Amino acid sequence: MKERFPLKNWQRALVWALTCFIIIAGSIAAYRFATRVISPMPDDVRSQLTFAPLVISAESKTFTTKNYDFVKVEDGTQLLTYTIDSEKGFSVAASQYEQPPQFTEIPDYQNRFLTNVAKQYDTVQSSAGVIYLGRLTKEDNKQIGLILEKGLIVFLKPDKELDKTQWRSVGNALEIERLD
Image (cartoon, rainbow, N blue to C red; front, side, top):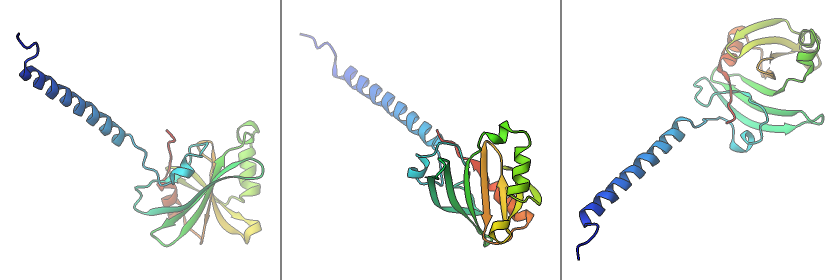
């Protein structure tokens, strides 16, 4: 009786199947590698986020970040906090949350907030948006930076007085973190 599938054909089929498997597995691995999210945030903090925050890129050569935390404050606001360290010798405490509805629903609310709460005295243009510079009267007139962009309120409190160039470098290093 003649064998139905000679060994040579079986070997060819096996090689063909393995080749297809390797190509498909390699394609999946390459896609996952190319689309991975490189985040400076720890996974446990990142997994809790309910909004896309402004953060320093993990690939930044000028800044590093640390002390990430995501908490719910007493009024229910969810707040992301972290520290930005510069190679230039200064640190900035960053905290951010989603803008409350009054920023878009009440005319001129943002301007009153900047005047009355932040005591705005200047602005700096950056790739993350306008940084409004102000003073915290309840904290010995310390400098503060505010970014009101992309549906966020981002408070930036430096550990020492920063000039406009330093503020711009911080703002230019910030980017939206995708949450896919």
